[in-house]
Structures are given as structure tokens and as C-alpha cells.
Image 1 (tube, rainbow, N blue to C red):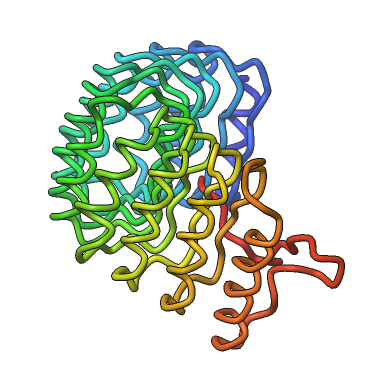
Image 2 (image 1 turned 180 degrees about the vertical axis):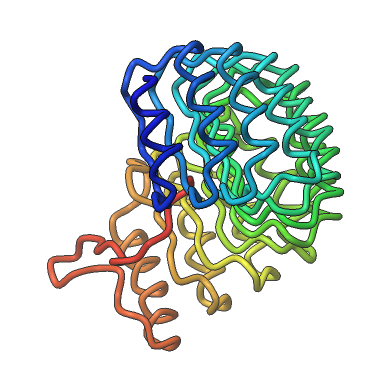
Amino acid sequence: MPHLASLIRNTPRFVTVDFSNNHISSNGLRDLAVSLARNPCIQQLALAHNQIGDDGVVALVQGLVQNQTLTTLNLSLNNLGPTAASHLASFLAHASCKLTTLNVANNVIGDEGAARFGQALPHNHSLVSLNLSSNRYGAAGVAHFMNGLRLNASIRVLNLSKNRLFPGGMDYIVYCLQVNSTLQELSLSETGMGDDALSKLADSALRATCSLTKLDLCNNQIRNNGASRLAHALHHNRTLVDIDLHFNMIGSHGGAAIKRALESNHEIIRLDIQLNDEIDEDIVSAIEDLVDENRTAKGLGAMRDDDGGEEEDEEEDEYP
């Protein structure tokens, strides 16, 4: 690691650096942090899938405070716990922070770590995209996080997927969405949502004024009732354009409700309802036809190819 750190220190022209999957430990991060503090050009740094740990983040933050150029940081898959989350959160709240994108997915920050990030968010004005997926926090952690997010005016893309947020977490998510007018993309996939939590989200947030344009609800044990309540909200909502409902347990009754909603809602340009085995194929096809009509009206290409399968957009955004 010392020679890599020296390379960064002595080659200031580097803008993007990817040290992912390099067996970097906390000791290696100390050398890198010193170099990072002295480099005036690096904007994107990837350190995913290493062994940085909490001690490594402590050293890294010391370098970040002195760096004025870094905007994108990937620390996913590094066994980061609450201590690391606390130091990262302190940096986010620091006046010198210029980060716009932070990925801390697939770590172990837990409820305490999620709460620390929530405490920092009202003081951060740079962060646009935050990925906290798969981090072993639940309703208690998301409660503190959302209380902070409702006072944040910069984050537009948020990934909370693969955490057990429900039951108990939806009240805080809804309250945040009722207040926060900046958040545009939200991933809640694989969070144990179910019908009750989705119904609360649909009735209390999505039906009213809501800034969300993209919502990921895949793999959440959503059935007919939840789908029907979402469909009812779509009769009123005109901000959502992209909804992912694939790999749930929605039947033809819920599918038909969504179809009826799309007959009056012409804003949806992507709706994935595949892998819901109980929905009649005719209903799935009708939903896809309605989405394609919306896309055509907006000058976009069809989502499906000539064989009836879904065709991916060339520049489709992904959650960070």
C-alpha cells in the first residue's frame, strides 16, 4: 500500500482512483489518507471490498477533512461498524465536506450507525446520493435517520434496501416524505414491507404531494391489498415516473387495479411488475402497453422489444 499512496501523492493529475478488492487494511489506509490530504485533484475514490474496518475509516476521515476535491467515495464491503459510521457522519457534518456521492453498502453499521448518519444530515449541504443498503439496521435506526433526512435539502437519491425496516419504520418514512421536498429516488427493496406498510406509504405520502420520481419496492411480499392501495394513490400522484414491483406476490386483482390506475395516469414511464406469478399474463401485457403509450407520448422508446420482453434503457440510472 505505501507505493500506491506515494503514487497518489506524487501524481496529482489522477481524478479517479479505484483500489477496490485490494486487501487494504486499516494500516494501509493511514498511508493513503496522508496522500489524499495532499492531492489537489482526486474527485472519485473507490475502496470497496477491502478490510478497512473502523480504524481505517478513522484515518481516512483525517485525510478527507483536509482534501478539498473528493466528491465520490465508495466504502462498500469493508466490515464497517457503528464507530466507522460515527466518524463518517462527523465528516459529513464538517464544513469542509464536498462529497456528493457516498456508498457504505454491505457493512454492519446497525441502528447506532444509521442514527449517526441521521444526526449529520441536517448539517450537510453537499451530499446528493447515499447508499446505506444491507447494513443490519431496523426500525429504530431508520427512525433516527429519517428524522435527520427531513431536515436535509440536498439528498436526491437514497438506498435503504436489504434492511429489516418493517414493521415499525414506515411512520418515520412517511413523515419524512411529507416534509422533505428534495428526495427523488428511494429504494426500499427487500425491507420486509408487506401490504400494511405499503398501504400506509401509499395513503399518507404517495397520494398527497410527494417529490419522489423513482420508487423501488421489489421483493417485499406485497400482495393484492398493497398493490390496490398503491394503485389508488397513482390515480392522484403525478410525480412518480418509475416504479419497481417485481418479485412480489401480487395477484390479478392487484394487477388489474394498477392497470386501471395507468389508464388515467400518463406520467409512469417504467413499471416493472414481472415475477409476480399470480398475475394473469394478459394484465401484465396490458400494463406494459399502457407504460409504452406513456413513453411514446413523451418521445421515449418502448420498454419492450418486438418479442414482448422488456428492453433496458441504454442510460438507465441505477441506485449507487
